[in-house]
Image 1: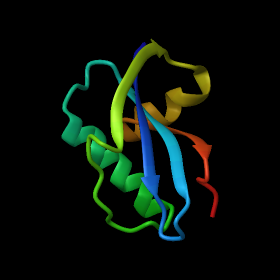
Image 2: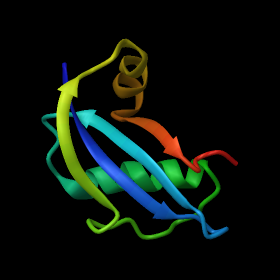
Image 3: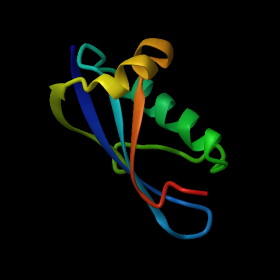
Image 4: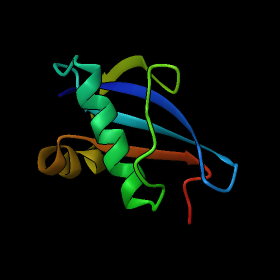
Length: 88
């Protein structure tokens, strides 16, 4: 399976910038769907209902899915790859 990687930077409530990738099947092209996935992740992290826009989240590249992402993509439709300041 090929996945699209959406590079995302969001300002946290404490002022730090979260950096994470939203991984979705490459057939999903609707940015509104991708942004909804990002907002769901932010709610899970306690960062509320903040806006997520193209200036914060943009398509980066396509790559092959890694085994550790498969379950989440099959269950939720996406996987979040955390990079910076995504901890509590």
